[in-house]
Amino acid sequence: MPIRIYDIAKKLGIGHKQVLAKARELRITAARAATSSLDRITGEFLESQLRDELAAASGRGFRGLALGNFKAFADTQNVPIRPLTLVFGANSSGKSSVLHGLLLGRHAIDTGELDVSRTEIGGDSVDLGGFRQYVHRREASRRVEWSAELDVGTLWGQGRQLLGKHKAVRVSVTFGVPLEDPKQPTSPGMGDGRPLVNGRPGIVSYEIEAGSRVVLRLSRRPDGTMHLDRLDMEYMEPLAAAVLQSYTTAEGTQRTATDATMRKVLDDLIPTLRFTARGLLPDKLLGEQYASGAIPQLVPIQKAERLEQLVGAVKLFVPRAIAEVVLGVNAALRAQLGRVRYLGPLRSFPPRHLAFSDDRGRNWLAGGGYAWDVVRTDEGVRTAVNRWLGSDALKTRYRLQIRTLGPMDEMEQPLADAIEGLPIEVVEEGHPPSGPDYDGDLPVHGVKNPQAEAERVMGLLRERVSEKYDELVLMDLRSNTPVTHRDVGIGVSQVLPVLVHAYADVGKIVAIEQPEIHLHPALQAELGDVFIESALGERRNTFLLETHSEHLILRILRRVRETTEGKLPAGAVPVRPEDVSVLFVEPTNQGSVMRELPVTPDGDFGAPWPGGFFAERFQDLP
Image 1 (tube, rainbow, N blue to C red):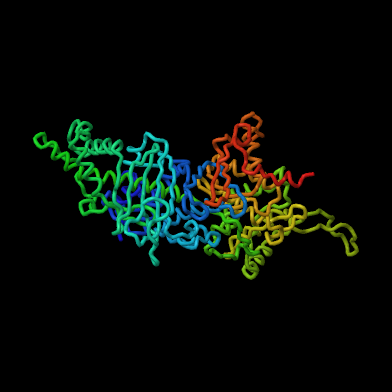
Image 2 (tube, one colour; image 1 turned 45 degrees about the horizontal axis):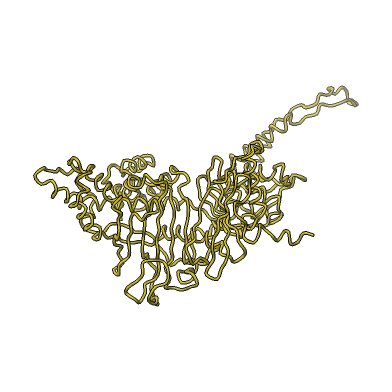
């Protein structure tokens, strides 16, 4: 199905000129005007590129996540997201529910699927089992609550104009399976009826909140559509006034849009607006009168029929403006979730010879298999990893290098030609022979510059051998012997994908389970500096780390203290308390609860660690 430039602009909440400019940059010749249509693949590619651009322009747009009735969480738990977000807790306390909730949102928005078992980026590491498994206590009559807090700078178009006075906007959805009781609740929690046996989960309610007020609310009806239940008049009236001023010739629309007649028109209009729903979010505004993008650019308002024509303009333009707000906020959410990357708790242990491996299965991302390909092909990332491995603090004995391999039979003829062309010259002078019994020194012949000739032969081989493979090896610096990751401890294979995320990702939201696995304490502490530099340096990534590592958090706290005291090591990146979010998940009889432990400027916690800070260390000390 063709996709119009106009539709992409509306979906992303931006102007069609910005879409056309990006299309020209990508050399999409079919994009000539707002009404131009693209084939589905080209249109989706253009939209994905624009999403990435919008997300990058907004910086750290994802400020928080909230989950309710999801896995270990019953009551809604808030997860403040900062550049360095660490989630602690005992085994089976519900820590992984935080990361899995993020992946659920990403998958539902990408695919429209809520009955999720395996997510695309989670691979085999995340198996949610479907709605009836991941809903809290497997009680299918419950409504799962999922919400995200976005920086208002991520919004575009009408959404930014309407909500721009706030710092953040929250998008909240509830979803669940249909209940036998026709009076289905639209709020999270238990329903009054039993879930339909074969009922599939769907969105139940959708809210946009700003400044602790619900700006807009949609709820599901039995026919599956989402109806507009509420639009806060504090926001609605300025929106209507702005729309009238933009699309009509009327003057003084601000006053007219807020009089009693216009208010009644708006009150009557709101309940008539309906949206389709796809997965986690409302999709588009329903109604034949809104189906076409070909609307008048400017409606003349005559004095004789001023109020009647203004009412008509409100009915024509305001619903579209409301839809632009909804779809613009949704586009910002899609762009932010599109930045999410995930690394599971058990990383891939690739085959001995990476050059001949093409195993890009569903664990390619979550298992970290792709990371080896990045290190093999990206010299900059390989250099950064080697710098970490060979740092003064670690002093590991390995270095990643590339060895070029080629078939022996293809080398035979080029080598023969190269040898035949070697210049044999006098490399050591002697005395010319004199007489049959001469016993003096003879001239020595050979290659005058073996190093230069060897380089020439290697250049000839590179030109003539068509089938070459770059193999990644670890050089044992003690013996200068090439080995593979299969010949060294498993810790290298487990930490390398973590390092690749830190050194290769830019502007991403990186969720990692157990980044410290198979690393001794010194390396765990050094990972803290890696995450700090990647999050707060030029790459500006956001890390969500599920961890048990005391050494990791202690290193981050130390850097906070050193920043405050002005004692950071040379080259270290400053860390402030507001850059760090430390969360502790604790199971209770009513479901797991999450506590935030504020970090103080002196590198300590502003609240007691539940049960003591890693208190087991003191139990084992004499």
